[in-house]
Structure formats: structure tokens, C-alpha cells
Length: 142
Image (tube, rainbow, N blue to C red; front, side, top):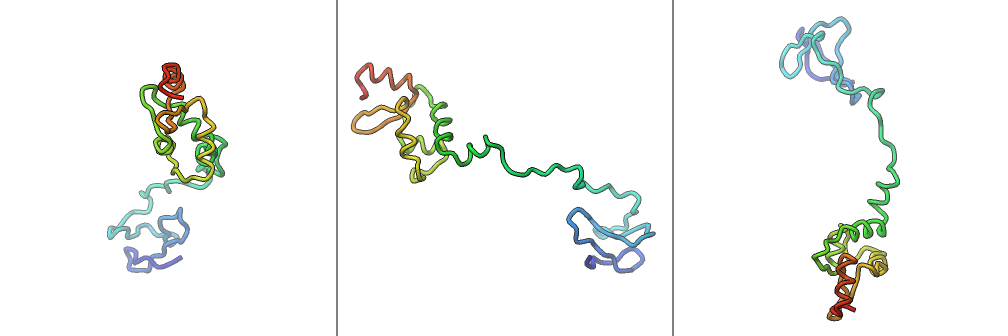
């Protein structure tokens, strides 16, 4: 407990150090000074949340883990959402996935997605598999 000003009678008021407790008052006290105003203790709202009713979240789910740390999962989700009308470079795929191009293990993962990639002008390009197959059939991509 620590001192927190004076109550309406001029006595020292004490505040509890516990996070859930907004204030403490002497037993039998009817009013306290709160924010410079005299407040009737009976009309104060109850504490906003008690530890017994609040459910604590411990750990993360498997899908949250994969979305955050599994590079292959992140890249596969990004590749599945590629637009059929747009052709991307490797750096664009990295930006869409929210990863930096220098992320360890990212290069082999992107390069293993052969359905989504084709080569044109000496550069490896990525797009939706239907677009890549169409361009390969037209001999525009290797």
C-alpha cells in the first residue's frame, strides 16, 4: 500500500499496489476523495474485471504458429492467392508474403514451387499456374 492523498475528513488515504484494485479505504468510511471530488463509496462501480472471470490465453495454436514461423506455409498461402493477370518477380512474392528477401530458407522454398514459376528473358517469374502454363504453351516462357 502507498499513500494517495487525503480523504474527505483530511485523513491519509491509502491505495493498494494490486493492479485490479482502484483504491483502498478505511473500513467504515462512507466517502473518499477521488479525482478531487468527494465520492460516496456505496455508489462506486464494481471492479471492471476479476481474475476468476477473465480467461487467460496461454500459448498459441498450431495454425497461429504456422502463420508466424513456417516459411513454407506462408509462401504456399501467398502463392495460392496470386492474381491470374499479374506476373511477379521473387522480390514481389517476398513482399506479398511479408518476408524480407534475405530470410533464411526462403530462396529454396520459393524455387521449389515449380507450378508457379517460369523463365523469360533470363529471369524467373511467378504467377498463377494457369497463367504460367498458358505462357509456356505459347512459347513465351520456358
